[in-house]
Image 1 (tube, rainbow, N blue to C red):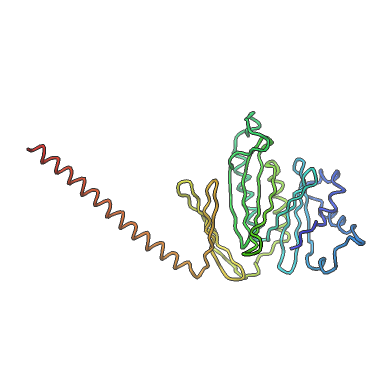
Image 2 (image 1 turned 60 degrees about the vertical axis):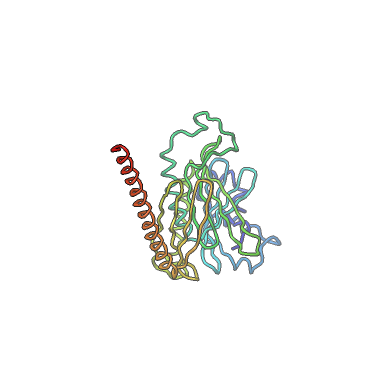
Length: 303
């Protein structure tokens, strides 16, 4: 996927002053800005043909600009999200259309959670430093193929924000993982979600290239301070399940191919039954010993 500036980013920079009132509606103007680059600065024809920009939206939140661009290449359609700060610094995330739809749903959960929160530490005059976010108010974790997405609703002196971090696993011998992070001010989550939802509705594809019409919905269980997520996905190699263990300061996951599910289930059932037998025997032994001790005590009293 091409990582150069999109047409909206190039076209939006010069017209930033007039774009604030338009919210997410600068797609057409952004495309025109990209075409004006022209001349010697234009990318090679092969690159233009490789990745095509289909649509764009711009969302202004506080002093940040967010560009959502729908693109298409030989691998399919995807959405690139770019955050441009006041100083012009850029951070980008890349989402397949399927991941974008899941991300949209997660945003809805974060919006609902944010609406239920009380006053922030900054509003209440708390002692948090500007760059000292406290523990996450809500966290979610999404894994798809070689990309991981970490979503954390946090708070610092500037207010509440949703931090989204994407890591890309390049594979063995290719330099490990690379990451990009964007931070969405919480009061702009609804506007951002709506802009993303509109692009998905207009340009999303119903069927993934792998051809899986239906997959079971994901679920999760909580045990003590740990939460386990079970997400079913598919790729060109087939159907798989991603099992993720999530704690406040720790995340880990494994991928289990569909053909191994029954074996995993059988192994879990086997060990659950064996462990229950061991615990039952231990409980019976402890009960027997306690009764024996009580019986010995009664004999001493009789003497």
